[in-house]
Length: 100
Image (cartoon, rainbow, N blue to C red; front, side, top):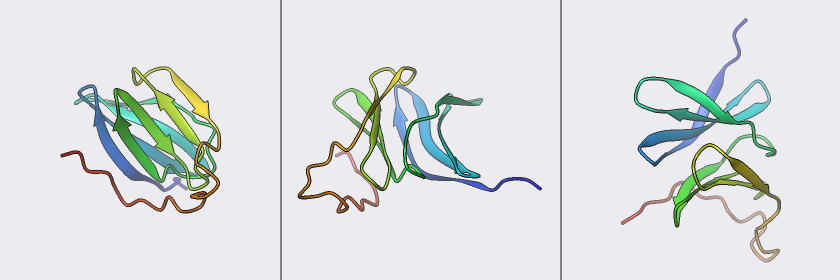
């Protein structure tokens, strides 16, 4: 049988589409360059990527426990654990981010 997966959130960063994909208990960050999909990292996150967004020249992926993985180039990723302030922990139920 084939595993079912889903992209929960997508964003554009440096002319490519990035998304957090959750399949069979594994989360990966995938990149679409206009012709092919590739896996750019397997972050240390708890479950699915509930939010992926770009801010100040970096791309961020966040899980439901507010664990964060970040990249400045879309290729090299670093884990930031539990960066949300205690006062908002568990309160980052974001549907999307809109840049205006």
